[in-house]
Image (cartoon, rainbow, N blue to C red; front, top):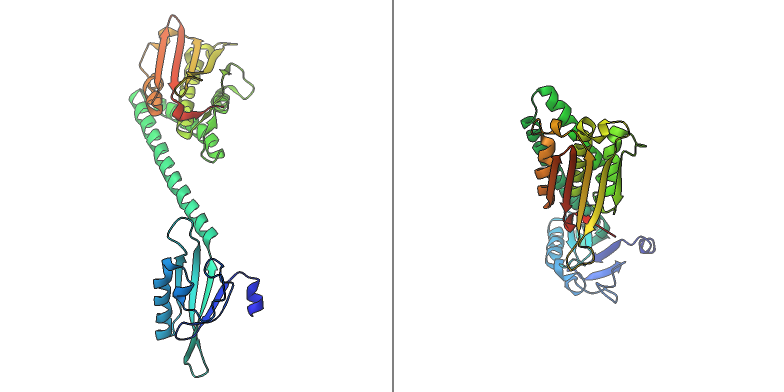
Length: 315
């Protein structure tokens, strides 16, 4: 049995009723560099757990009932985790002749559990953020909608925009999305994948999840508005989207500057204040801690969004 145990990595220790070791197998070298025969627990077991281990073994000697214990070899982050089972060894007359301790290392399992807990907290945090964004969109859309049908049409489009951006973020394991992918996804929803009426000119950066969702919403509003009143409402119409890094190479971090420009129908744009302009001027820049300028005059629409460096990564 001992030879078989040697190949499993399972730690097994047999102790007499006075808790002196009779034999042990697969005891880690960091616990004891020599044979543990004749030793007691405080001479080789991890100091961080010794009191609990001895207490459980004495309980087994007193009652004969098995005990279990999970312990860590050290209180610092480098400590390894173990599961311990303690059983009484009885003779033919039922008298306790010793204690058998079986120990299995579970460090990798504990690390996976910790990773899972971290991921669940992250998912919960991001889900709450997403719900807050949806709540804000619903409120603002309702405020600037004249009928339930108008509200549903606009709200549904904005939700689909968020879903499209969210798909990119999720596919990257919540790291974010490339700006170029975000533009392609938002434009393709209305114009088709082969449409070139909107193209990104300039630098391509990697947006963090929050920036991807809000810049995606801004692009949605610009595309939808353009298809109603602007360049995309006309055959062969073109909207111009550029990106640049301001301050690159200077003392401070660079700022991403996005600009959208097109010919539009200024009279129609001025008819009413809509959520689209509120999102572009207030919601999106505030969510990114950035700045925005939105101008419609002389049948021209210009939008400029400044995105601080904390929202993206650039090569």
